[in-house]
Structure formats: C-alpha cells, structure tokens
Length: 112
Image (cartoon, rainbow, N blue to C red; front, side):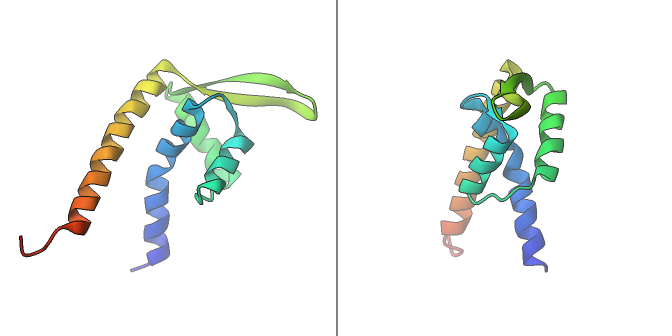
C-alpha cells in the first residue's frame, strides 16, 4: 500500500467541502483561498484549485465578479450561490455523519 497516495486521496475528497466553506464566509480571491488552505495544512497548488473552482462555478455552486486591483490586473472574486449554500449544508450534514462514524469505529471495542 502507498500511504502517500491514500493520504492524498483523503485530502482530495474533502477539498471541495473546504473550498465551499471558505467562500461561504465571504467573497474570495483565489490566492486568499490558497492561503486559507495552506494555514489549515491542506497544501493545494493553483493547478488543482483553478479547475476545481471552474467546476464548482459551472455546477452553479459559485459565481464570480471582477474587481479592479490597485496592484495589477482585475481580480476574480468567487462567491457562493444559493444553490451552493444548499449544497454546502448537505455536505456539512454528510461530514458530521462521517466524523461520527469514524469516531465510532475508531473508539469501539471489537469485543462489543
């Protein structure tokens, strides 16, 4: 078994949820999202983030707006849509259930 691959797959599985959580707290520029993920020790590169943001936008979960920048070209700020907020609420419910299930399995006595 390849531990690194398994760990990578676990991170990828939760990445959409984390990105939607970040954006749900307020409009975000892509570098802001990358920084928040980095702070959470979820190291993601731009080549992973941009296609994911595009997929979420194309799925109707995100929208974006262009905003002028004082230090360069205009920036694209992502915002969660109403559909995205509903999707995030469902993911949050699923995440809570998964946390409970993993905790239950991890803490259960095999003799019970």
